[in-house]
Image (cartoon, rainbow, N blue to C red):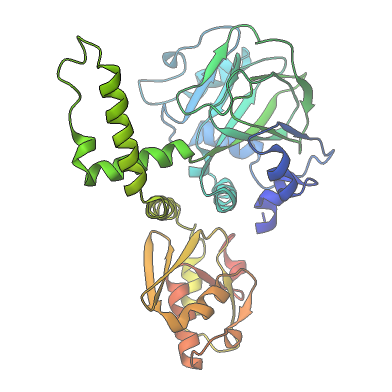
Length: 401
């Protein structure tokens, strides 16, 4: 697949990304029915799915088999406590059970690149789970998820029902199942190959395969929340201010803390938190942690290094697909944070660095700023060695390279 077909814009066509973010994101479910079965071609084939189940070293964490109509225990499809048994898995599927393959971005390069692409847009981790449901079957009871999901229908069709949220934007751990649906359906629709369903977290839903087996990918967004930021702020202040580390009254478990003591103490702590909190500092740490945990997928790095050794001013390069990065300037230096490392350069490199990472391919001689010709080549070579840039001439050697 090319880079464009792995983008959020491609997933949402014909809805513009800006329209999706303004109207639907975290607010309202979205169904896109395209009549375009080939829209997700190249992501994952049925043959690849069968190979993953039958010919790879899956563990009990990688696969779950469920059936809405009966309870299935792990020992029903595991050889031992760790190893799935493909024979029993396929038998359960033939009997109406749904096969769930978890975290396929760790096994399928196209899904890994898809996750990196959307992670750039949302500054959060994404995961891909696969659901294979037999004809006329349902895997899960009505439930809501604690992360937003984009459902990509690959094969067959599935009838979905959504319901009015019982809880808005639940946190991790606030997942809920209903043995009977929580009211009348708000939406009823059927997904066919190439269709998309965006389901905000907290939206109850259930799904039933039609007269043929259904295969869909669930692309899940594991967002960071304001609650997480607040918790990090409190932890940061508590490390520096002993008032937050003082113990509660020794007898609070046996006697209620007096209202005036509780109110006065909390008011004082709130005031100290407000005066000492470093939100920008904590946000920078969260950003650095996210970027460090999401290095680019270095497909074709060998050919990139070979190209780096013979650069000229007329060589054409571009930013690596899926590179998640940020720039920080301080004290006459500029630092590029990407690929789990920090690359610090003199400030006179700043305009050239920003230009190089802006996106479009460019000739090395066209880099702006006060750098010498040899300095431009040296900068580009360093960025290629660090996995941030790739050569246009060698990009055909590996997907995403």
